[in-house]
Length: 104
Image 1 (cartoon, rainbow, N blue to C red):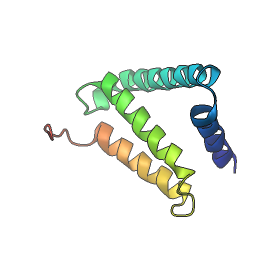
Image 2 (image 1 turned 90 degrees about the vertical axis):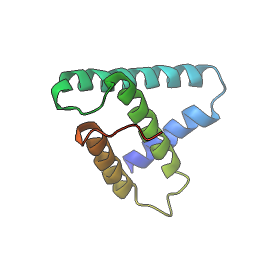
Image 3 (image 1 turned 135 degrees about the vertical axis):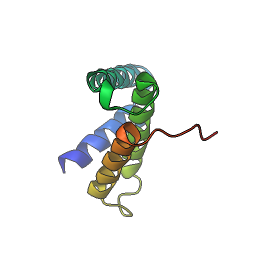
Image 4 (image 1 turned 45 degrees about the vertical axis):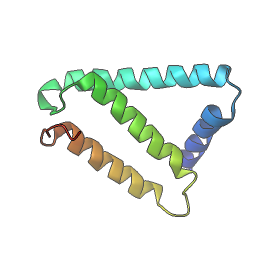
């Protein structure tokens, strides 16, 4: 239940707070999390297959954030544990899987 409560609190801070304190806290949280991703990626630079680890940190943070934020809306359709397992596999494949050519 703690995970659901955390997601609900995050959603309230991001979506329902006035654009002031809530957005400042959200921005600080986003920056902190991206910086943490960047630090971890630098520590494991030799293992990663991404071209730009700083960009990868931004992409992965926002990808995970979007999926996690949507869990509250689709709680009857998916099990959050299954979603977390999928996110984990996605992140691992993206970071240490084969390098891919540009898709676009």
